[in-house]
Length: 190
Image (cartoon, rainbow, N blue to C red; front, side, top):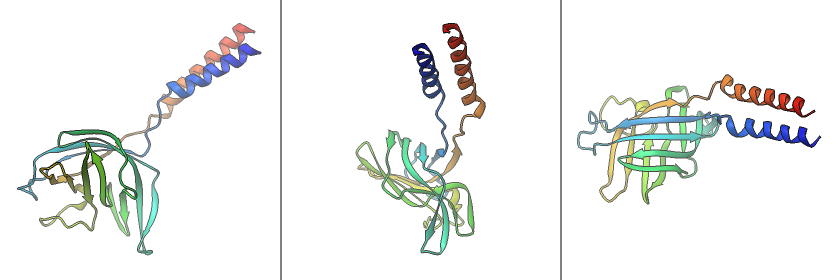
């Protein structure tokens, strides 16, 4: 009986600790200074991994619905400053729609602020943002700024890619293998 319990515990261990965690609601965002609309801005690039909660709905002014993701952490690099698992200010959101406007990719809803190496970093975007130049594609342009003494910042391109969840077969495979091994071991020990 004790052997069966031990085999079951080993199988559960392998199932939970060897299988890859799902990366749902994780986005990789890249871009660089958009010199077409900001010729005098700092020239730099950025690469961020943004982790969010599930997609939800928010009423703006009690009237316009927005579909939003609440940001839970940000990591990556901005203008050479690397950081990991930074928690942004409360109510930092990525917006997928605003009223009847639907965006191709999630964009920042207003200002997202967080701390990078002791400096305040800001990502400003959304349909209400005023950006110099006309016309501006608001779903692919954001302001990224770091108050690092030089006030590094620019209006930047915003390119979003969803980090895919591992396919079910990838998660199911190790689980079935562990179950088969547990069954075989149980038979050998009986």
